Length: 289
Ligand code: PDD
Image 1 (cartoon, helix red, strand yellow):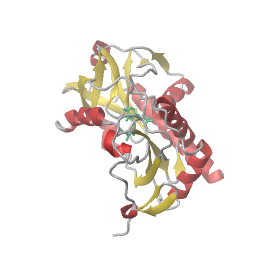
Image 2 (cartoon, rainbow, N blue to C red; image 1 turned 120 degrees about the vertical axis):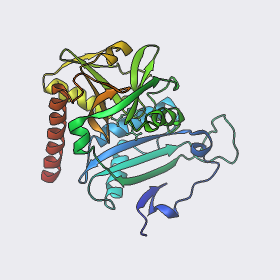
Image 3 (cartoon, rainbow, N blue to C red; image 1 turned 90 degrees about the vertical axis):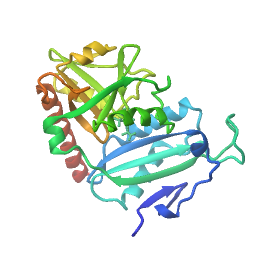
Image 4 (cartoon, rainbow, N blue to C red; image 1 turned 180 degrees about the horizontal axis):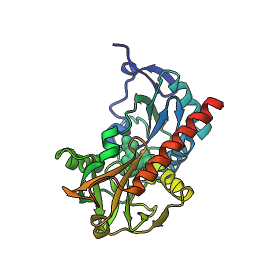
């Protein structure tokens, strides 16, 4: 089988020709950061914003960025020459491979850069029209959830709680307040107002979250960014998930109980339409460029 082309430390190579040291701190400690960028028929959505967030993640863990945002954009375009259609570009930068395992961060290490691209499946018509099931859990992750770290064991274990019961996501509460889901941001709608948890260290500041907020403002939806209680989520008229690959999805059952009327609500339908229009504009401007 022909191997997909990936990027490794400055070179484009077939995926199976890339090998990484077992001492790489990404492997040993999960000491690295990453991004996932959605690409619609060759056009990346908000790539610059993703690379700006990558920079913020690196700043948080004192990892020197081997590339400027413009260089990252160029590397992405080079990789995408080998991957057509709707794609999810994955970028990972780890601290690099020292010659021994030691917790203390070694000085002068060369970061390891890895990029790959995989076909992206956007949510099915069924999921858009009927919504998806979610379950809840206590948020047992660490206190630096704003860092898009490859140390994802907390997120993986949280996601598995929903996977085990055939649900789409696990919505998390910390100290009685909504944070996010295992790999998505969460919005709760009540009486026509869209509430979103604040941008703090307890959630990943989603690029899609920002886009949803922008579209809500442009579309004159009422927004309220504030701490949202668990009780509010459980009695919400609508709950939405957002992420680069899920776009925006309605949650129609939570822990087995219907959310609102058990169908995607009117504000979700409006937001979904705004999101699809935004994608269509992106496609038109890319064709024009
Ligand atoms: N996950 N919160 C968490 C914990 C996430 O992992 C993600 C994205 C989001 C949404 O962020 P964005 O809108 O920038 O995609 C929120 C990606 C898609 C992943 O890990 O595959």
